[in-house]
Length: 342
Ligand code: KG4
Ligand code: ZN
Image (cartoon, rainbow, N blue to C red; front, top):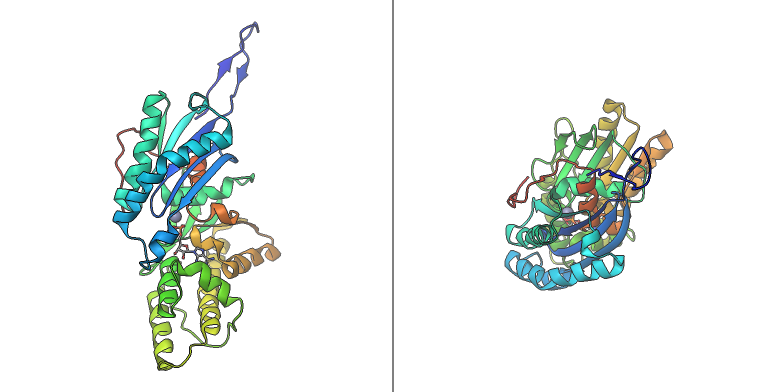
């Protein structure tokens, strides 16, 4: 992405590194987002149109409706990003879009908008992997550089990643069944909370006793995880109340305690084995207060801990632009096709 140019009057050309402005689009699930990021770390514009209200009625994301809402919002988020930034399309260095994983009909909207902008303004196009983009949310407003261990926790993924460099990373552990966000959303549903369950459950957990119920931590090899047994345990617990009023806050707190301590233990083990001094968390569930608290407690043991601020944890396009800038396993091909699974 680095470009050089020369001043007109100097005898020997002076190399100037012009600032790089990447406009990115993100539409993999239920947020239509557009952002402009300068040099991978400085957010010049950040616009997110959320569809949560629409899908809450159904208790989950309806792909067909989501795709149509993306179509309705995409032009507006692009216009608003240009307006916020004060930049003209000609001043954008490159256009980027999320390629996958995500809902195919949804991805197509943002990706094709980004490709079209690149073609019309004759600029490079950069396709981005949504999961790598979540990690890159950690470069925004920081001086963080690899290597580090990353805990990626979202609605669809739970991974521990050894990030060796900007472009070289290895998944060293992942869930063998439900993702953490999925477990949050399913448990929330079981106890009658609205979609998306994660943020509500997190809030109620703060009012409850984390030791009220002993829920099982799955024993899984290495750095892998399993959360489906925990979900079943909560279902059994709910049934044991046999229609009587549920101690919702205590259930939330006990579930949150179980999830966060499982994540903490595995991350700590991976960190110690890696010899790295840095750990980052990323993905929508990285917004969770207890997970943040436990992972940030590693600072007391001399580790540097980083997590994006809340608005860069959940789906957004600033992280996509950052990922495009740092060239984190990108697809620099205008013909790249969307994909649904990692
Ligand atoms: O990364 P994301 O915005 O979308 C995906 O790529 O999946 O993550 C969405 C997930 C949802 O499952 C949502 O319930 C969860 O992140 N989430 C949370 C919190 N905020 C969002 N889960 C637990 N605690 C939170 N505070
Ligand atoms: Zn996401």
